[in-house]
Each structure stands twice: as structure tokens, then as C-alpha cells.
Amino acid sequence: MITNRQRALRRLRHNPIAVIGGLMVISVILAAIFAPFVAPFPSHAGAVVDFRHRHAPPDALHWMGTDNVGRDILSRVIFGYRVSLTLVAGVLGVAMPFGVILGMAAGYFRGRTEFIIMRLTDIMLAMPPLVMALAITAILTPDLGNAMIAITALWWTWHCRLIYRVTSAIVTEDFIEAARLSGASHTHILLREILPNCMAAISVKTTLDAGFVILFGATLSFLGLGVQPPTPDLGTMVSTGAQFLPDQWWEAVMPGLGVLYAILGFNLLGDGLRDMLDVEIG
Image (tube, rainbow, N blue to C red):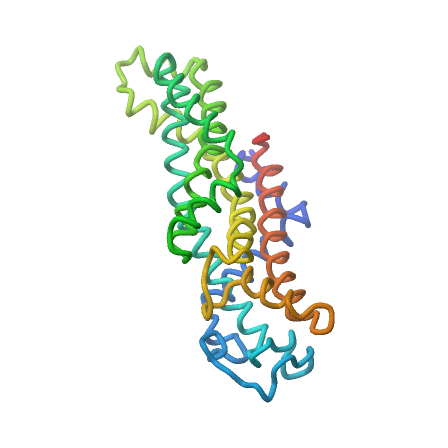
């Protein structure tokens, strides 16, 4: 007999787009982990200057060309993935659990708890995310840690609303009522009965959010409010390279393609997981 897990894996294998997305995500993660070994010029991730090779177009030695001080762009893109994935881990590592806890509490306890949590969520969602992040990073010193704080400040709201909707549907099921009648505590019901049934939605939402966090962090860096030079960051590289358009087009286009590659991989994988797990997060 075919189990639900086997059926889901078969559905994923028959989705070539999701497989491609998964391979793209794996390649980004491996490139970030082994950056000192796979980058052609690892030293170019730091404050290195080589004016003899500045503004060199893509060739056999520098596949993505060099920047305005002669650093290899491909090497800096690979190291830039480390910054992007660190941002993803930091933001979602805080925002996801926080939003999930609040969403389950609102959906399960109802009443005043639901009103307070969901009205707070509505207020936070009413604020434009980019404007809020810009305000926070403008007050704080622009760096990776403060960029995480700025993005996390609003990111938990989408997880809270999603899990609230899922929990509100689950609490009406018979097995929840059976758990209450058997004397199970609220903690047991939330963690053992409700949370496992939310994991599919959480997995898909987190995967899709990873790409958006990368884009959001790159936007902050592009505006000068994210990771600061000489640390290699994709958004900062695009911003610096844009000053030399259109002649040295590769200095902005190549880091931009690096951002596109990572975001596309997470989005394709997230769509594949959504089909595989048959969940609706919209």
C-alpha cells in the first residue's frame, strides 16, 4: 500500500521544475559552505585591490569579470551567498517560530487572546515592510545584524496569520475534541496535535520566504543600509556596479544574476513542496 509520504515523493519526482529548484538551492548552499575552496580568488572576498585588472570584462580567467578595484566578481558572488544565507537563517530562525507560536495561540485559545494577537498582526501588516525596515536600519548602524532585526520586525506577521488560519480549521476537528475529553493539557494539544498538522504549511512558507528574505536584504544593501563594504554582499555589489553602467555592465548584471539564481531556486522548490504536500498558503 502506498503511504502518504511515498505519494508525496512520487509527486515531487514527477515535478521537474521543483527538482531543478532543489538542485539550485543545494548548489547555493554548497557554494556558500565551501566558498574558500570553490571561489577562483578567495582573497578577493576581502579588502583586496588589483588596479591592473580593474573593470576587466568576463573572460576565461574571470568568468564574471572584475569590479572597479580589480576583484573577481564570481568569487565575491560566491562569498556573498554566505551573507544571504546567514540573513535567511537569522530572520526565519526568529520570525518563523515567533509567528507560529502566536498564530497557534490565537487560533486555539480564541477570545481575547485571538483579538489582541490578530489586531497586533493587522497593525504590523499595515506598515509597508520596506519603509519599516529602512526606518529601523536608518536609526541603527547599518550591518548584517541590524538588517536581520529590521526584516524580522515585520516578517513574523505572515507566519502568524498563516498558522492562525490553519489552527482555526484544525481546532474544529474531532481528534482535538477527543484530546480535550481525555484530559490532555493545552500544551500537549498545541505541540502534539496541532503543530504536526501545521508543519506542511510551515515548510512551504519558510522555503518561499527564503527567497524573499534574500531579495529584501539585497534591497537594503543596495540602498546602503545593509551589509557594508568590504564584506561581499550581492545588493552592495549591484549598487556599486550600477555606477559604471552601461560600459562595465557586468559589474551590476552579474551580481544581479546571482540574486536571481538564489531567489528562483527557493521559489521553484517552494512551489514544488506546495504541490507535493498539497497545501494552500495564499
